[in-house]
Every structure is written in structure tokens, then in C-alpha cells.
Image 1: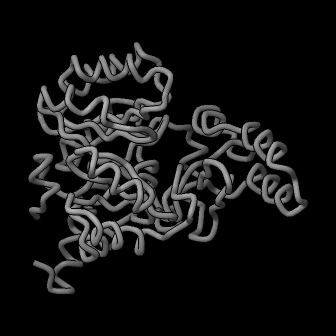
Image 2 (image 1 turned 60 degrees about the vertical axis):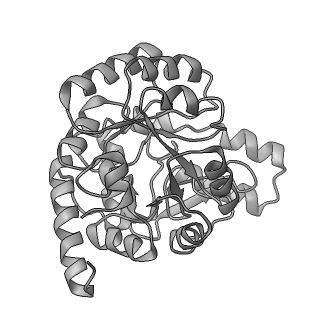
Length: 314
């Protein structure tokens, strides 16, 4: 299937594996997804500089197909990570959490395509004006950092598609090829899946984290941190404690302190799924088994083709 995203990035299928701190902070998942015709994305945010450099080198050696790195632009290690990415002449940057104007020209000079992650129409328009090549639009169903306004993927993606001229990648609530087809029907030209790729052997998170994703139903996520920089995570002791504090009228300072008392690392690396931030999207309720990343890609493509035939999509 050809779209502006597949043509821009040089990938076979309009499917991108989301950057997920810890889960895709390794070379193996990225290589497997890219070699299967999608685009793997290395999550550089939580990585030490030397580990990031090592993973980038491994990816370059492990695939001849397009791949990407994600670097949050507000990260204190951003200058060093960007230098490594530039030296490696990365094919694609999927950037987030910061302005792009100071970086685009440098990466354009080596031929890098720049995608920017946004969670509102306003930020989509700003990124387009700054000159990025495409947008990744996160809806409220997404795990990690969805839009604070809690606008669904269905509505936000369609509104952004109508508001910009750039190709749009839809993200949030997608776990199979039927969801991919739905986003393409909205006018998106690619999709990004995160939670589905947590349930793979290649995702570098604790087995307890993967098992929690498998056990979750569609209603088993919580939106934590309203009024700040919210996350969507699986319901657990931490999310329930936070919700109870909100109901009790805790101050903003008290809520911030409580929010900071748990971490994603606590769940992803230590396996504390009761009190850590088990970041995952509502699509966890559609994930039933752990499969190799290449098999996930194969099934996504087969399901997309089946869905296209069902509705007569070209």
C-alpha cells in the first residue's frame, strides 16, 4: 500500500512502531520492525548517551531499511543525543516535546526526514509552519503522554488532517490491522502503534509489565495527572491512590508530589506493576498474546488487507 508516508520514509507498509521509553530503547525491536517493512523507532529519551550510541550503531548494522530515533527535545541530554544521531546520518527523526526550528536545517543537510509528535491542532499548525515533513498525532487513547484535553484519536486525527497539508500519522487506540484501516479511512497516511509492540519478546521491559498488558481490558487504563503533563497507564495501586487524592481535594502541590513518587522505570525495569507507572494505551484491551515483532507486522498487514477488501478501499 502506497501513501505519502510510505513514499516519504521509503517503507513498505504505513506502519510505525512507536518510541516507548525502555520498551523500544533497544536495537532489536527497531531492527525487527524495520526489516518486516514497517519503521522501527529507537526511544532515546531514557537512554544513557553511550547506550544510545551503541544502539544506533547496532541498528545501522542490523538493517538496510529505514528506521528512526525519537529524541524528546526537552531532555537534558538532547544536545549529545542529537550529535550522535547526526553523525550516524539517521534516516528519520521522530521528535517530541519541544521546538524544532533550531534543529531542522542541520538534519535536512544530511537528508534526514523529520516527523514531529503533536497532541493538538495548535501544535500541529506550529510544527507545519516550522517546516517538518510529517506529523504524528496522538489521541487520548494513547499510552504515555496523550493530549491533556483528552480528545480522542478519531476526532483529533480527522481535525488535524483537515487543518494541515502535511501527511499525518495517527496514533492512539490502534492494535491491529482493522484499526490501521480505520485511521487511513480518516485521511491519515500512516499509523503508529505502541502498546501492541510492548507484548513482544523484543520489547525491553520486565515480563510483569508485558503480562499486565495482556491481562488489561479496554477499561483498565487511567488518565493520571490532569492539569499537568498527564499520562495514560494501566490501573493499579498508584493510579488509584492518585485518583483518591484528587477526589479528596488535594492541592496541586500535593498531587505533583504524589505524581513524582512513582516512575515508568519502576514498572518497566523493576517489574513493580502495582505502584509504578505502567504506561499503556486503551488498545491493551485488544492485545491477547505475546508475539515476535515480525509476526505482529505480518498480522497487521494481513488484517489491513482484509479490512480494505471488506470496505472496498483502494
